Length: 266
Image 1 (tube, helix red, strand yellow):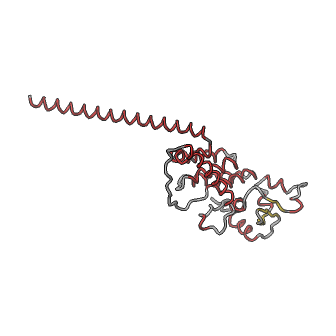
Image 2 (spheres, helix red, strand yellow):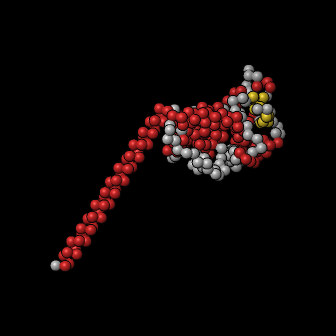
Image 3 (cartoon, one colour):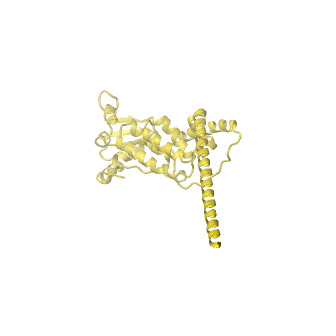
């Protein structure tokens, strides 16, 4: 949730660019910001504009490690205490994160294809009419940039947004796409745990689709498969015992009824 005490005033400064004394440059886009705002919340940005660094003379910090969407979310947070979730693909006029997402999808597709070749009994894929969802990858990247620039409040917020968004994902592949990015872009154990917990709820789907093997490798996937198989066997054993118990209780009741009838007839 946005910080209501700073949001309206600082948000206006961000939109107008008035009194800006620092520029963040990313992907050809300039973000006109204020040192008093951004450097007060990021020790890394504060250090970058000190002598003898070139940025202290140019008043510009070039960001090459992240896309403009991610930088925009970071700046938005620094001024308002919040950032808006990524709109669905169909509603965007441009998508600066597309190259990175395409790369992730190609990696998964290639690995899944290899996995399918090795697994003859592969479940058929079903196409789901997914409802609009928040972009899980965007939350992961925001978490990554928060860690990079040491903005702890943003790191916490992005983790909470990711936790909320990952609870209701129609396209299960989105979870592992986000996990693929998370493993390479952020060391936040909380983010990894959030995605692992969400993916575990549909572990059988991920095993059958080959997506899990693409993410963690064949050996780790085999361990998970055996664990799932052991759980299934245990569930079957429990069900058989419950059935036997129910049958025994039924027979006991029938015998009791039979004895009662016999006694009444004497």
